[in-house]
Length: 497
Image (cartoon, rainbow, N blue to C red):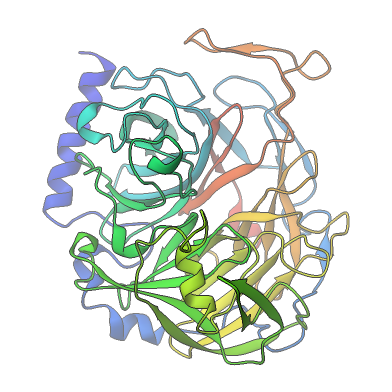
């Protein structure tokens, strides 16, 4: 029997588990409890971290965690190469390098990006992974391809936590553009997002700028969720209490949106799109079709712990990618003309502790990034962290995730080299947890050739970390180029992550 046959049998078993509603997503709320979890979930709501409104958004910054210790090169258990620097006691294995042949016979696409654990049972974990590729030929079969002239999409991977072994990977969606991030759902799927408004106006076969729902098992339907908006999407986070989906936009100005589905968990049945408006005086202006509109820009003038009350404005035409007569901003403009607020390059977003955490990649006085927390029960929006731009500060946080131990992990995507993973603790302390050490050049550890024949020979330490996602004692994360996925484990309970 071949490895592909083994994976097909495993996926069949997994699909039966899915049909029986026995799989759980990455969080506590399994799909069985999703529609009835509001009372239990509401009981867990707490103020994000312990610092909101306390003036501690510029808390201690450390070169490494005092609990986990300093970073040093650690050999990959798969290749033996020192691809990462980690604290003592942590180990990892690499998988799914660009060009590696997947179980369906398709080479692993390049440009790895956002990921999440989207389903698990007693012995297996399914991870959805994005590939941020542009216009080219689709790598996926026609039945799961949206636009055959587009090269982006998703792959799924399977991992066994008990053995610490990667099981396999396969293509799940193709024919999309710039799949940057997305988010896991309580119904065991990965919502993948296109960071573009490319379309027929500039050569694509179809309009792009949409979200797609990709299941953990079974074939994806390459049908865009148009009511979730047509704009430069980045990531999404699902509130399991309400089923509302919160969406970020990688642009400036950009909105924070929420999608209220007509039927929770059935996004294809449509719903209402809204944009966040903070109840505060305007501090910025935007001219749209000759008229000047005021709005609030969260990227500037924030005091530590600043907290705002929130309301929402309706987006009447979510499938309007462009302002009339232009080629940009048709969705965000509908919010700005109603006084909705802006985030500077909204990127990572994650649900944890009853709160939606939101990343502004270049917000703040130093333009190095901010982390906000939206409390959907209290309807407040608060500054959690703002990078001061120092040597031990985060430089451009992008993908973020909530850890099982109650802290955030931040993937760095700024101008620095090498790139790093940061922890952000309950009291606002932030520290470096991992460093990209993948230098395949002659000045590093040398070139590496994969079983596929693909050879890597450049210094990739400046490539961003992407797609951090936790499952119990495992952290899955990737680097975008040359495209590698890691499973990291170790003495997590010694520290905050």
